Image 1: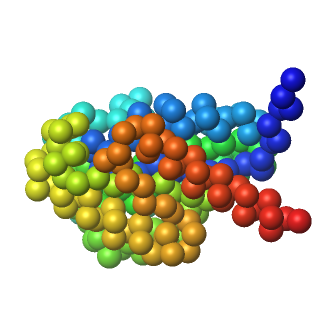
Image 2: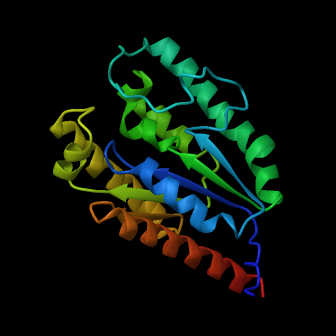
Length: 216
């Protein structure tokens, strides 16, 4: 009879990537593979929702650029609301879950707004939005799914090919400094789904192993 897996301390993981990179498919396989190492699993789409939100906002959009941007004033107010939800939500929702040994999964994160403001109907200052990003607690690990535009378009055509290419490059750019700090990993999402999930699991296990070694 095999021993039950040793429970890890809580871990917060963000799954990011352009439309068509396979975030939902990865999450469906990634979570069950790791769940046994934690006391439970909590899932959030985009943000913690401590400050509430509509049911529509909590589900992925199939027409990300379908609605017009809000004006600058409303965009700025919405951005501050989003920032407050990330900060307060981390301390009052996410951190208690981590303290209880849970695996916390975010499907998308604040950085998606920096890459695709149209999805969030944001028309305010991108410099201000980037500044706020530095004031938001990061997940322990951000798995950034990367694939060429032609692969993305073969899976989803929710945005034009040129937009798929632009987004893919923008995710690579935003992942690079986080990867250098050990807070992100760029995952080749053009591979078969089993290989993509395996790469995500291996990167997560490396983080858990490093954390365990540091605690000795």
